[in-house]
Each structure stands twice: as structure tokens, then as C-alpha cells.
Image 1 (cartoon, helix red, strand yellow):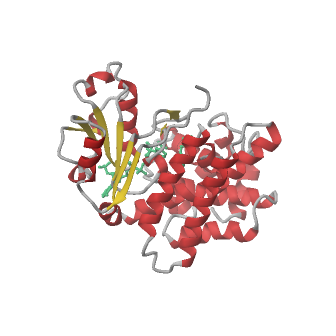
Image 2 (tube, rainbow, N blue to C red):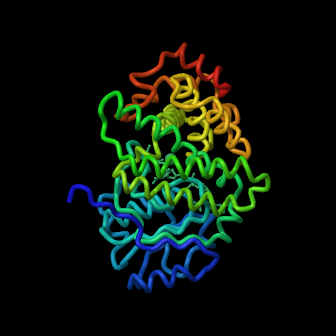
Length: 336
Ligand SMILES: NC(=O)C1=CN([C@@H]2O[C@H](COP(=O)(O)OP(=O)(O)OC[C@H]3O[C@@H](n4cnc5c(N)ncnc54)[C@H](OP(=O)(O)O)[C@@H]3O)[C@@H](O)[C@H]2O)C=CC1
Ligand SMILES: O=C(CO)COP(=O)(O)O
Ligand SMILES: [Zn+2]
């Protein structure tokens, strides 16, 4: 079927540590394998588990890992969920997402983003969020999650631009959904000085972002030029073996400052909206400069010059930016 949209069947965002057991019984799943990291093992439900660091993704018989299990539960940040989602997909069994923080929109998405380009798989059959765990998770992770959420604003602008300039397919419903949840969260961050409901609003927005990807059948509503910049940084981290531990959402946040400046210069975004993006990132404590992200200027300049070529995706970067122009842009939007 061409346009079948698959989204999670159950989504629980609550303060109930036992929700996972109820969901498993509703789905008649009895023997899950839990994929977890070393810091998040303490949050795992009481089933057999494997550390994602012990999984060799290149392993041709990855199916052996899940032999005898009827499902996979990913417990943790983006990597646990990505790897759990991936091995469940490889073996054709259901995946349940149990995020322990809200650091990116892989929580409910049909995407595995372990390398570029990311691949579309099945979304989790269920998403089970214990808000008590999210609220206690490291602030830095919750700031990164905002970066991956606000990135939807420039992602949708890039998608519209691609539709206008090269006739790329465009889903109005998922674009409006994506833009609206990102702007709603940004407005909340700018409005509520105490950010008392931030973790809950963030995790719900990130779940929504994953659903917009399912509706579009692509990461277009959540990934544009700002993600290309983040993926370029990931590429350069590997190429130069840089010792920088920046998170995906943090990189996307700085990427969004750059992309929103480029869209402002082409009248696709107001000056006020561009400044609200920077201000809201600052309010949640996310990095807003390359230095705070941990990169030297020349790496940031190189990332912006190669970003357009990271994958086949038309954005406001178009066919690429020269080194000189990249340096000018990064200075003009105060990233360097
Ligand atoms: N599928 C998709 O759509 C997307 C997927 N991704 C994936 O996400 C990854 C990045 O995810 P991200 O979360 O930023 O980074 P990580 O998954 O590397 O998580 C960062 C660290 O936070 C720890 N952590 C998570 N929750 C808690 C908690 N409650 N308390 C204490 N520590 C905690 C993790 O622990 P531990 O060591 O136990 O894991 C890990 O050490 C990317 O590498 C990519 O694989 C990114 C974007 C989109
Ligand atoms: O990070 C993502 C969405 O937030 C996945 O997007 P990509 O398609 O750019 O990997
Ligand atoms: Zn992302």
C-alpha cells in the first residue's frame, strides 16, 4: 500500500512505573528483550536485557540476538531507542520505546538514525514514558531535546522551499502539525519563567514530532538544513577524531540558529521569530554558539560548507556555500 501511515498504537505519558507491564499484557507480549545503556539500566523493567554497547550492528546474524523473544523494549536516550528499534525491525518483532529522557524525537519516530542517511523502519508499537524519570534526567539532555524540537521550524521552511523550487512532494498536514508543536513549545519556553511544565511539554512535543515523520513518510517535517549542519559536524568529528561530546539535539539547536538566519535573509522568517529561536534555546540552557557546542571555528566553517552534500535533500543551502560566505554567515548570526 502506497500511503499507509503507521503510528504507535499506545502512548502513555504518566507517572506510573508499572505502565509497561499493562501495555505488554494489552499487546499479549510476554517475553521482551530490553536494550539498555549502563547509566539507564536502573530504569529497565524486570526482563532479560542487553547493553547496546554489547551489540555489534554489523553482525550479519543480528537476528540471533532476539531469538526466543517476542518483542524488544528500548530503555534510555536516543541510542538505546535507536538500536532497540533497529534490531526489532531486523527481526520483524514489535518495538516498545521507553525513553528515560527527552533528548531527541527518535522516541516515537519510524526512524533509525545510527548513521546517515537515516532509515525508515516501523515506529514503536507503544511509547511508555514515566514523567518522574524524565523530570529527573540530566538538564543537558532536556536542553538538547529542545534543540531537536525547534529544528522543526527551519526543517518545514526548507521543505516548503524544496516544494517551491524543485517541485518536491510536500505534506501540508504533517508540515503544519510539525511547525505548530515546535512553535507552541517555543512560546511556552519564552512565556513561563519557571519552566515548571517544560519536561512534560517537551516529551509530548518530541512524540508529536515522531508522528509527523510517520504521517509524511519522511523526516522532512523534522530535518532540514539545520540537521545537515549537525550531520556534517558528526562527519567531521569522525574524520578528524575530534574529542567533542556534543549531543544531536545541541548540534541541531545551533544549526537552527544558522538556518533561521538564512531563511530570515530570504524573507521566509521574521526577524522576531529568528530571535525567538535563539532566545528560547538560551532560556532552556542549550548551546547557542559553536564555542559552547565545543567546536573550533574552522570546523564550524567546514561543516557549513559541506552540509548540503551530506545527503540528497534540497534546502536553503541549495548547492552549497563557499568557505568565505560560510564564515561571514556564522559571524553574522553570532555562532562564531
Ligand atoms: N531515530 C531518530 O529519529 C533519531 C535518533 N537519534 C539517535 O539518538 C542518538 C543521540 O541520542 P542522545 O539521547 O542525544 O544521546 P545518547 O543516547 O548517547 O544519551 C546520552 C547519555 O544520556 C544518558 N541518559 C539517558 N537518560 C538518562 C537519565 N534519565 N539519567 C541519566 N543519564 C541518562 C545515556 O545513558 P546510557 O549510557 O545508559 O545510554 C547516555 O549516556 C543518536 O546517536 C542517534 O542514534 C537522534 C535523532 C533522531
Ligand atoms: O534527527 C532526525 C529528526 O529529528 C532524523 O533526521 P535525519 O533524517 O536527518 O537523520
Ligand atoms: Zn533530530
